[in-house]
Structure formats: C-alpha cells, structure tokens
Image 1 (tube, rainbow, N blue to C red):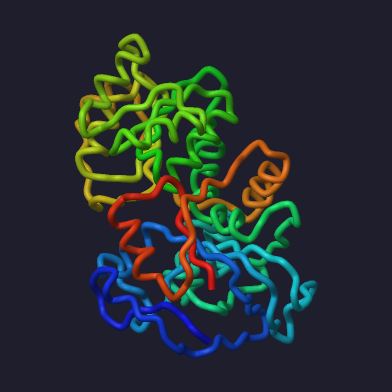
Image 2: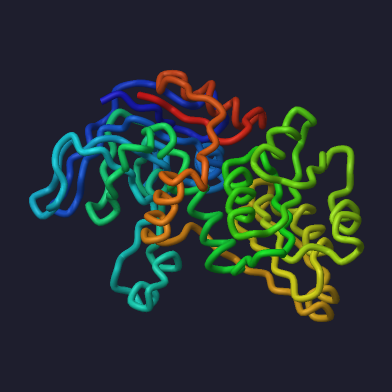
Length: 342
C-alpha cells in the first residue's frame, strides 16, 4: 500500500510518501481501507520526537480514521467487507485493574491508534475489531474523521469530568484547534456561556459562528483580564486548557472560586506552573483527562446525525501531500480539522 510515514524525527520535510508494508489482521483485528484521516497535535509530537513512537521507526501517524472494512480476522465477527466504519482510537489491555474498573483511558498499557501503533496516514490501517463502530450514512467519511479524538476528548472533559451545567461560564483555549472548535460547541450544548481565544483576527468570526459569546485575540489582549471583565470580576467556572506553559498558569488565574481547570494536552510545552495559593484558597480543581469511552463516541455520532454538533473541517489534502498538510497545521493556519484523503 501507499502511506505517508517518517524514518527519522524532524519537521514536515521528514514525511515520506512511498510503498509501505500492508497490515495483516490477527484473529480479533480488522483492516480498514482509509477514506479520511484527520491530523492531530499528537502527530506533531511523534514526528518531532517529543513523543517517540513506542514501536520505533518507521512510523505512520493518524489517530482519527474513517473508511470501509477491507478484511477481518478469523474471530472478528459482525462486520462485512465494504461496511462504512469509524475507528475508536483508544487501545487498552482490557484486564488490568483500571480496565476492570471501567477506566480504560488510564489502562497501564493504554495507547492510541496512530501513536502506539501505525495509523491512518495510509491506504489501509488495522485496529481491534472491538474498536470498530458503524459510521451512520448521514455522516460523511470526512466529517466522521473529525470526531474520534478531538470531539471525544472535549466531550469527556466537559460532560463527564467537569459536569458543565446551564448558566456556567467556560473559557476554551485556541478556538481554531480541533479540540477548541469541538469544546465551544459542546459547552454551548450543555447550556454554558463560552469565551474563547484565537491567535489572529481572521479567526474571530469563525469562533463566534461556533457559539462563542466573547472572543479574545491572545496576541493583543490578556485573556485573564478579559475573562474577569466578561464575568464582572467573578472569573469563569471552567477552563479547557491544552497548551501548557504560561497559558496553563494564567488559566488558573481566570477561574472563579470552586472553578475547574481541564488539562487535556500540552501543545506548547509539557510543563506548567501553578500558584498554590489560588488552588487552596479558592478550592480549585485541576482535572487531567484524555480521550473518552466508546459509548461516548456513539453519543457524539447521534448528536452529529441530529445536527446538534457539527464537525469543523478546515480543508483536506491528498495523502501524497501529507508534508504540506503537516506544515499547514504547524503554521497554525487551520480553523478546525485538517484531513488527509488517500
């Protein structure tokens, strides 16, 4: 098959488009013919070596995949060749103490398709049959590829972890990202008011179109000051933070008493400081969370079919132009998800 992969770490120039080994399904696995695959920030961490692929190089990125069933292992039942599917990207062992407690996202062997295993920057990809869900006919392959990681992570953080309620205020960092564009919609679906940040003025109207009430260009305005003004000095109830560093530290300052900081990534740096006086005096909660459950992904698919949530797609690149797609994301030009189409 053809695939976009890398043999050494670096930037977009390290992406190669060439022949790659075909995936062969084991008994409980399925091979999917990729119809669309979305780019994610974790792909950039894998590529530049900040998160080296656990199985070594060469490696194929790509966590969010839709396509059709190409082949099934001997024990993979209930799926037929040509069936439209979406792949749940979380990989868990199923038998450690955390899996048995139903907390598969903290499995001791937890991983992601496209990170811990070769992913969807290819014509074919394999995954456990248990991770395969039917893709409703009402959802295109392209729209479906914008859901399994970014939308699911935002849903689990806001709905399951923060339990966002009507009337609350939510600050979402980086509206132009996949997580940001999803989190704005989900917070609004929960009945919350939303403030968000962008890095350029051309993204302001985009953020408002998703439901953001107040949009701040963080290059020209202090988002903490703006959050205090927006809430009449009170501060916000919840912050969705996935940048790290100074953004993490200042996000804590934007919270009101009993506020919750959801940390779901570290796109700028893996480090973040916190003033402990704010933490204990205001009874704040810092909640680390990643991905979600396959049942939550089913719920998201239902909301998309009913029109309550909208996958946000910036543009799509042919698979052979993966290097250009990666550079486009690294340059932060995207407003929503960027896709690859084999």
